[in-house]
Image 1 (cartoon, helix red, strand yellow):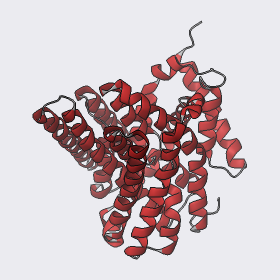
Image 2 (cartoon, helix red, strand yellow):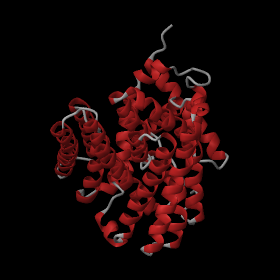
Image 3 (cartoon, rainbow, N blue to C red):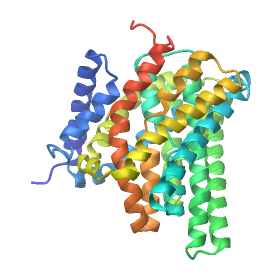
Image 4 (cartoon, helix red, strand yellow):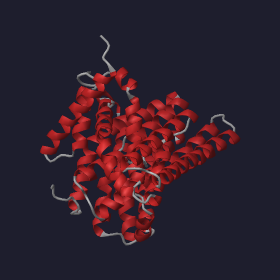
Length: 389
């Protein structure tokens, strides 16, 4: 008997909600409960959600990740960046460089494969904006560390996408693609992302001036995001940067963006819960045994590079002590962006992609299990978690 997609979605949302409530009672972030519930009902354990079902309802992941990146982009305020000065940019670049350098050098020493090592290092730059945002919202965290963490996660995902595309284009060039083709593909993705994101954000801002009520603007934003995601998929580019750009521009030019974000939070939770449960269901426990030396090196050196890079840049440029001492703990989670890039490698080179996929997917199992807890610890140490009302 074939299970209906709607039955699967309903089960995913309700069981995820239950897992989140139980873990919250245990003083553990809800997002960990969502993902572990997904792991239990997924193909690796009970099989209530099959691999075929995950493929059938992948659109939910696209919508949820689009909403998450829109919200992360909405945390990028020009006034805040000016107030923070260059230190925030330097910390983001330093933690990105730290992760890239340590992962690349260790991978090269272990495998001797420069192309694999550089691509693995580039993927190691990305953090999971979804996990960071959910933990911050759950504990109503406010303060310098919270602001810095959101901005740095947004920046390092942009850096990751750009660096990966640069090196992946170079890898394609070395393996037979012409320099003109490679250059045009790279420029096309960056330019089209900027054009589409800016155009949709501009449409939202103009529509805002003629709305009848706030719910209408909410529909415009959701419609705009779906338009951006659909356009990206139609022309064959990543929608991640598009949604980030829409959020950032809307936040800085909208007259009522704070009201919009408050309204949006009332409708996005079912998508978020489904996203994290499905992310947990997609984790493959059997891959943990295939980590090997390369996987262990990635698992340990990526967070070390991020934490050390952010700390040293924070000391050098006078960041708040609470920020520089705790920022590294909040940068551990890694999921959607990294997995998407690993899949891109597999499509281009299945043999190379299999190695990278194994390392990334196995690491994500552990990063996503302990990452939310470490993010909560970082926010708690900084004294930014607000008491529950």
